[in-house]
Length: 124
Image 1 (cartoon, rainbow, N blue to C red):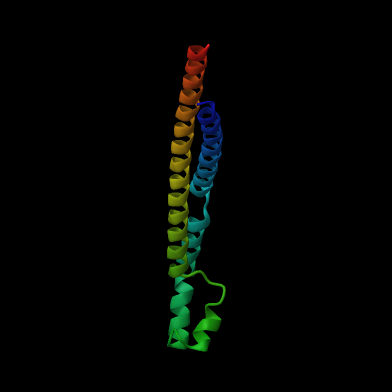
Image 2: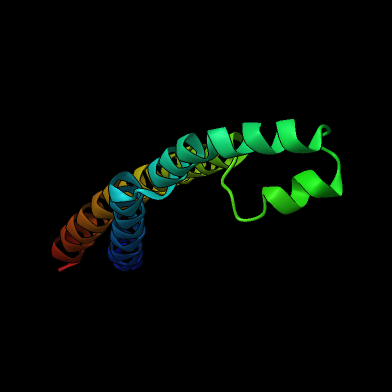
């Protein structure tokens, strides 16, 4: 049963590492201004898009494309927001899986060493 205890300790360490990685991803995503800055820039650039549409007519023309190069659109805002939401979900899932692995590893480690000690005492 000591092998179960050793495997439990290794699983506990691995789970702790995965939990730590997930928490770092969550904190970095939570404190990032990647999506909010893109949305602010898109709001500032909205009049420029309208001006380019009035000037060029069609949004598929080369004139419109040349006039809007380097501007941030609403689609960019939505894309960045969706990306950050997915990143947060992935971080939370990784943290939960790491926490569960660590907990199971802790239980395996304690149970393995306690049962191994009881069998050793009973054999003596």
